[in-house]
Length: 335
Image (tube, rainbow, N blue to C red; front, side, top):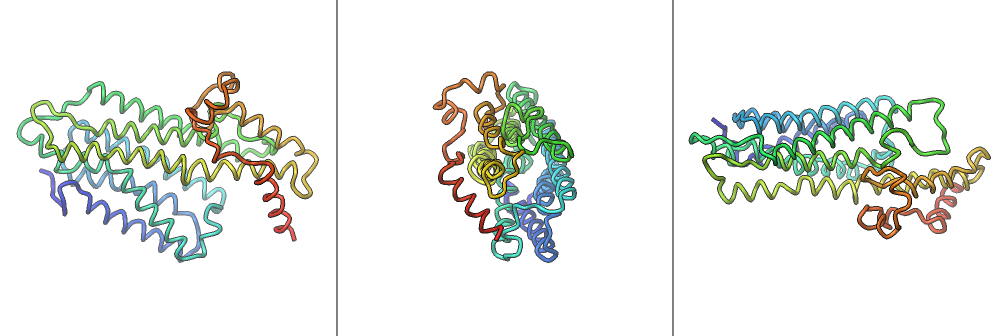
């Protein structure tokens, strides 16, 4: 029998556990001023919530077990990879400007609480008594429907894209003989400028679809149905964060700035003279998110790239405005 803890959807207990876990991570990271556990704490929190709700929910139907295992596999992979990456690099430059500021650094961790808890909602609700109570009178949740298969296929596709592309880029960055005047052009990175983000988005759409729980001899209450469909905020938040928050926006212009300064910055080495033209050619032929073969993407009209294919103007590096500012900042930094 499922254990009721604070509320029938497990919203309060999971919010409390997430808050406590993240604040513990913040205390350690702030005290020792290092980045080794920041991303690991975020990823591993998903594993903790999946296991916790599965065990206290005490409903080991196929859907509950499969969905929980998929989330735990995703969490283990991303937490382990991000920990390995930061151990190899030594620090995470995303936190250079906020690491020593208590309130800014705390703000990041508070945002991580909201991210973990909100994105975990489909599984939290599925494992809760609000859903499992429907099956206790002898009915059992139908599993193996076309919707279930669609969710598992989406998760598998997303997980493979995210895993393979992360490994490809990590291997490229660790190589000593990589060309410095060209972006990553190996594997999935030939087809997308941000394949791990695409994979993560697909993963969480798959989890949400899988966690929608039909039953064979019973129906969910209207409130339980609303909760399950309302958990669509999970994949939507993932999409919004990666497209408009901490994902693509924090990668596109900084990378463009790097290649621009290679060619036009103060004391730019002659061997990097073609870095900016190489990068602009890369932009023309490589989709920003959805993996598309360059031979198909390159000739597509600009209006299609900047609308349906998501390469919005906000991501564009303006050579005149952004380039001049980058050169001026580099000049000040060198003084």
